[in-house]
Length: 279
Ligand code: SAM
Image 1 (spheres, protein in one colour):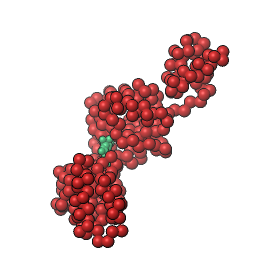
Image 2 (tube, helix red, strand yellow):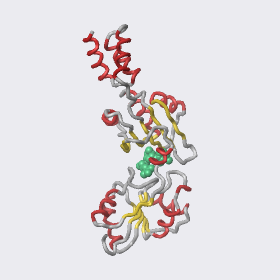
Image 3 (cartoon, protein in one colour):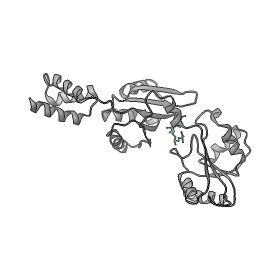
């Protein structure tokens, strides 16, 4: 460890409910010499709500992180201890701070986690879908073309996907999932966790779309967990195809089989061709 340097405490703050602030987090914020925060106004409000005396606040956000990291390192070099907080939840989970933390590792400066609230752990702790083998992907792009291409790529391997979403975009994202044939996958949507309007939605994507549409206007912040692809055996696909191909042309039979079994359309078409060639 670097001799004489101060310590950086990475402190989780509440995601809505002030009572989720831990005693340890409060005492760290009380004792550090400075706090690097995403938004100084928000941080000042938090300190005042917790009756923590005013501090030296350093604004550190995605647009100035590199420059401010140098300033924090200078404070640390002089032996000051610094806390890092984000607007809500755990820093670095899609929040600023990574450049700073990486620089601490490079310089062998001590960094200490002060764990607490995070939308991710709060959502997973009440999820009806297993958190096993989940892939966390942060935010899905906002623009339609980039969003669809990202979702298409994420859906390929069939694993469960955990992502952040906003109320303004949730319906468009769910619609896009349906368009990409993930309509029968299950999804868990955790909205406004720890706040007054906390709401949990669960069902197949096509059902949750309706549920959310009926609640318009939906406001607030959300975490979504899209369940893994419902695995269907080749037997299910083949037997459904065979029944439908007795009545319908192969393309139509394949399209319906894909919707019934949840198997990808391209794959079902291939099976339909194999079966029709067999006989
Ligand atoms: N670092 C934060 C954490 O640990 O939860 C997450 C920061 S990320 C920039 C902000 C996103 O987290 C929001 O857009 C929303 O998707 C999710 N989020 C934050 N607070 C939430 C809450 N109370 N309920 C549901 N989702 C929340």
